[in-house]
Amino acid sequence: MMKDSKVLSFDLCGTLNECKVYNSMWYEVIPEMYAELKGISTEEAKKELIKAYNQLGPNRLEWYLPSYWINKFGLNYQKFLKKCKNIRISVPSNLNKLKAKYRLILSTNVSKEVLEFSLFNSVFDQIYSSVEMGYPKKDERFWKEVIKNENIQPYELIHFGDDYVYDYLIPSSLGARTKLSNVNNLGFNVFYMIGIRL
Image (cartoon, one colour):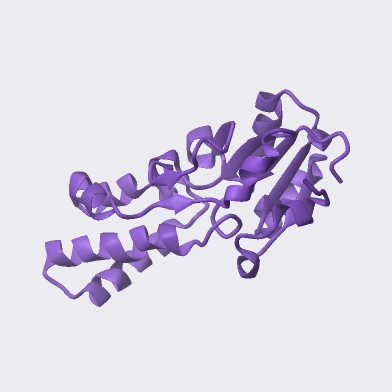
């Protein structure tokens, strides 16, 4: 599987770590702030916000931006940042061992705004965020741009992710190689998945 490969691409949420890290922003921090602003219970606030989240939907890139929701609900962004100061997003340390042989990139729907909370320790050579690129990962233009920017042929890219459409169907339709993981395999042994020994 690794023959001719130059770039290893990784999804983040649900692949390298748990989505609950991000969900705490949308389903805990923002509802708590909204409840305080409106003088209602956190549960009531959460119901209102979830309805708003669902109405917009994850196909809209704004969905991935905390600042969009903070502005929409009339909340204070600096207060939001303060409440999120203990949120830290990390990735498996064994990825560092791959840097000697491969270029490592992150291909994610997570916005760079959220990635500010990350502890990647410079493990990735490049981060591709759908919000900044203007296309969700299920849009083939996202993957075409990644391949173009990396200056590689599609078959030279191997992408690891957990979503059948976003991480498998679309990139593989363009000629990239893909490998699906799942949330039950978080912190997966990446070397086992790509079939090499270091």
